Length: 200
Image: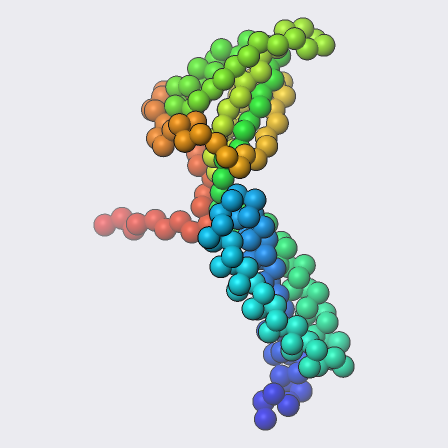
């Protein structure tokens, strides 16, 4: 039988364990993210399949305790699953973040740039060790972080900025569509699945 052959025990089964571990660890990473985002309906569904896959995998490992190849596949799948989970999270770029910017020089141009694109910008004058500064609060979607940072470096290259996740935010704080502006457009971070229509 195939299940009793050396090929299955030392090649096919470890490969299946490795792939299954990638799936369940990746799902676990996404589940934690969904829980932190307050997605109470999607997180339990992800958790169900995560545990189901884990039970199947651990069952195969226990049934073949003398096969060290399974241990290596199990550990390797766990490590790769963490990498894949983080990769998927970055591609999905879900949620809202608050970008806090502290500018050393005049920030009028930077503020005008973001407001021209339709962002809700709040700026507050403050005092730092080096003198007067401007503190800017900017809620944005995570997929736009790269473009926002690029704009900060363009208009205030020496500005200090921090980024933190937000769990709850007023609906009006993030406009659905940004206004068009002659300044360079903010490029959205690519989604996990993005299909382009072929030209006719």
